[in-house]
Image 1 (cartoon, rainbow, N blue to C red):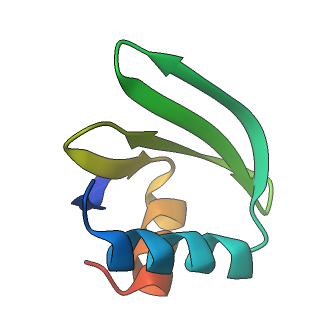
Image 2: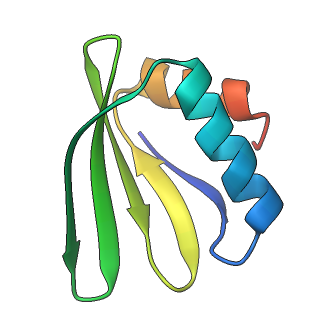
Length: 77
C-alpha cells in the first residue's frame, strides 16, 4: 500500500509523523537519495516500510496493515 502523508513544507505534520514512528519503535535499515527523492527503509516490528520525500511530498509504502497502522498512529489520513 502506498499513502500520502503530507506536503513537504508541512512542518507540524512531519514532526507528528516522526514522533509516531519513534513511538512505534522504528529502526532505520537503509537510506539513499536518487534524482531528488530521499528514500528511507525502516523496520517496524519486523516489517519493512519505505518513506519517500521530495520537494513536494512525503509518502510511505509498505504492507497494507503496516501502512494503515502508521496512518492511524499519525492520525493524518
